[in-house]
Length: 346
Image (cartoon, rainbow, N blue to C red; front, side, top):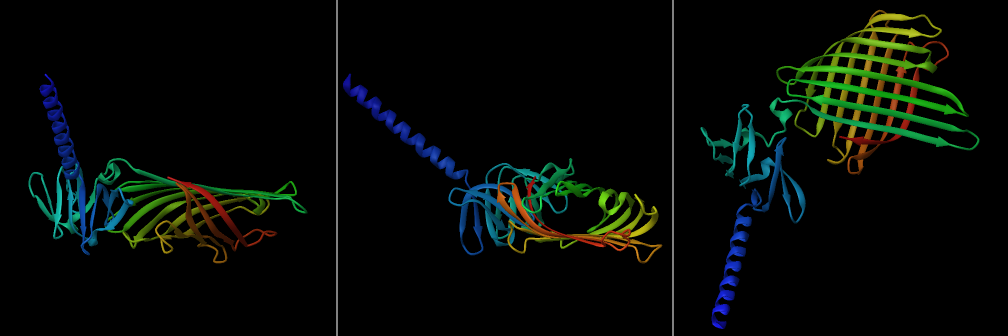
């Protein structure tokens, strides 16, 4: 009886050893692998690929981002969806890249040049289904106590819904300031835009805005009109958008005479990762020129540097310049503001 029990125990230990060995081999077989031009091999779990970059999650260094041009071979054994530059969408459970040639298990054509690959595991909006919602909500708040009692609140919400064919933008910003318990600044502005993408980097759009500045004698300024735009340097760390158009502008003042005119409009929006991928150097400039009065010009310019603090919370230092050559009597033409902001991105 005892020899039988010993034999059973040895058999059980052998079976456990075999199962562990097989499971280890299967786990190793299911690991994704990337080989670089310098001969390095990275092993981990494939995550995503977009904008010429591949992301892989590794045990030793977390999430790594690799330029597609640095990859000579890749083996992905998980289920992935590929979006090609010609618009084709392919699903496969085995993706192999060798000598910059992409091979997969699917019907029809099974090999492509790596440069034909646009992205892997695209989001639904990248396939034309729905929109990608991004935004930034930020504020700057200051308190001063002593000979002067100063309370100031500045707020801004900038959000976008981007699709393959069009884009919606909504922006709200404002400021409230009190000195010695008397309010000396109160203004807000809301802007809505619709962009329709055309061939290449061009697009057309419609913009509508409303603005109030009580202490500049501006009860309400509204603007509505079309514009043409172009996105430059697409796919690089530097973003540049230029727009120009026409707007019907109506201005209602408290004391001064009201104005209504057609204005030439333009805007420049640029962002750069010059100081690193985690930072954002930005410029937002808008202008309106009264076509009936060459002395009436409105310019709004914001220049800032944003940087991450914790998770999706970021800080920013910025300079805001607001110029209005047609300012009513008793108000300054140029308003300069320097701020440190805290914001949340999504």
